Image (cartoon, rainbow, N blue to C red; front, side):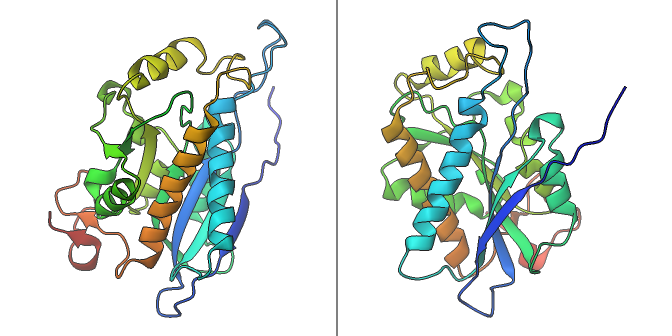
Length: 257
């Protein structure tokens, strides 16, 4: 037996200040859902989703707060989206990617926020998708400004770039990036322990030793990336050799490395 339910995306935006590019939209996105309940699980059967993805939504809200408080608005419009049903197949992101935006405009770049493991003081980040487009240099500048290193994907077997909301935009031809806290220092042990013990379990809750300073740092780096993209001379473009670049991509949407 199935039943139909409505589960909305939640959107807010900061209009771009430059009329020549205000219709180009930079999207900051995180999913607001988790995997529900299971009475057979202890202690209460509730899958709380603290890391996946409450802290992602908190990062989104903090980036939005900082941007709204900035003395000048970004050149491009910035859209903040808490999207639904990621755990059911990226459904909220798919709807957003395939339908016109409220107020018009077109998404030209995506910064996705999904399950940052904020359990340790990270000194590096992994930026999935950064090597596929001109978002890479924007991430590099934002990270360098905070003395955060960029490291290669340590979990290629997981295929993480194709498993979160931004991928629905990649499939529509939009360059995207997705940051994860890195494996330097104690990072690898903490991250892998979370995946083995708490991922999609009721124990992903606020009893975990959340590093709030790491959370603030993660929010700032994503804020900086979004502002870099929103104020850049050109919208993000695919690298010509990217597997994900739309077939026949040339000119404005392509960038030689």
